[in-house]
Image 1 (cartoon, rainbow, N blue to C red):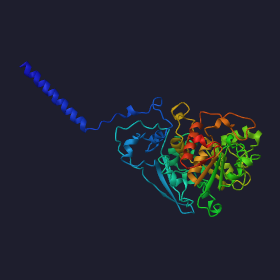
Image 2: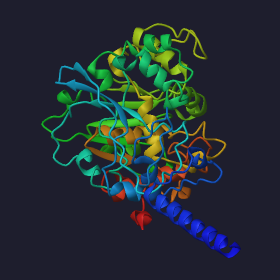
Image 3: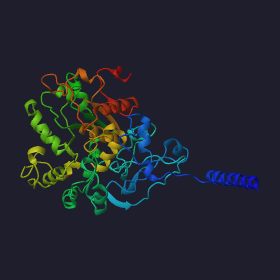
Image 4: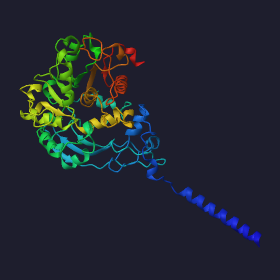
Length: 452
């Protein structure tokens, strides 16, 4: 009898194991969400193309910490979602606004258990605007970038500039979680309202606002983006730079005495209030006394503090700055007596966060300095031109042989290029090389073998 009981127990155990095995085959196992939380110390983000695609191809809901899909499995099931939350249609050339809401693109089912989630400070989730193109260029950047290695990073309808329509309570709640240039953290709603409501014309939301009068029968807009790198010294590129429809400059852009190498025109000047004041203190001895001032110059703020909004409001209304480090200062001192709201623009924080998350995703975001990391002012300017111009030529940006040149073209003696924790200049350099190789920009280099 004891032997029979043992046999029955063994047979019962085998049957139970078979039942459990069949249930496992027919049930998709999912790990607990807590087992896949991102560990910043163990989850590396490389600078490779594959890593960039991995982080950016899918909708990331920073409110709910949506899980990141596996790239290989998702490519078999769906096209990448556009990661944008709102579609504001601006139809017609007169700037008549027709608001239209869209839902997020559906998530594809992962082919395997989901991977780690994005940390909430990334926020790869953006506003969308359907702005009609200004040109009918048959071979512009926007038509070519989609077929390039940057195609999966590129969002065609992300707003580059912010203006009156963008400041709402809903948008303030969404963006106040992101500090510095990447959102409205630390900016109270009243300050936003006071500033952005004065940016209420098409000149404020169009980077190339005077294209109709400037194009001179051209089908494509040509932009020169001029950095301040020492590679420009002795280049004799001034005439070539001034020959473009638009000329972008930034920060300590010393022009007088260097026209032969860097040109003399400035249509767009990009800066933050902090970089403007620092440039005036640091480069006054070599001739920089403030931004270029001319009838064609537009001033593009890169806001990283409420002081940018306060200076913008004062400049647009010809009043003194109300508070902050620039309190009681007269903005016409920097932008000239003829400055008006039509000459002022301000980058949208979604756009700067998008550049950081997709084009310039640095390992710094995994470390102790992640809260201060952002694209350099020159990088934001160059990538803004990439998103608004049909053809872009870049001058004075860092190339692999940067150690041969001084930090700036106007340096009186050689100064080694400096590197700081809030920017990843070497990564930016690699991106410029890749954009040049892809034919999306023309990068000025003294030695074309840099690309090999």
